[in-house]
Image (cartoon, rainbow, N blue to C red):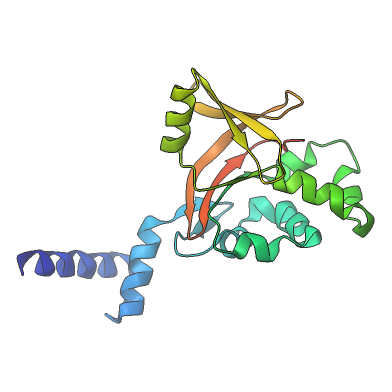
Length: 194
């Protein structure tokens, strides 16, 4: 009984700090969700929402969201998964050669777009802890098979994670372990190419 009272006191305190004026279960759930969220692109990423529900709120991922819609992958990434997504930012897409994104978003290039986007997705939920164990087991590198079918190589680069594509291009994780209801997102600073 003491632990119940202590939990209730903690929730009450959270509610007061967060400005929740009601003790409805929904208000308490919102208070708990807010404390467990990670900020990406100026928006809270809630672990109770799926990859798409969170990604559409990030100002740093508008290009990625547009690409996912154009590729017809919204339903897939809203599904149960779990998925690990290495999510390039708008800046990462802008660093591609001029015209690349516009060309990929054309309906006639949907197959190429799907190939690139699914190359950023690995089946399963791989947190930084999971990546660390795989890298240790692999002697400093871990190969991850993507949904697209080819591999990404993950390694430690100083304090961050490096993700290298089959062409030798390396992206770095800038925000890791963004937990979703159907997986995890690791924000990366480059677009990876199969």
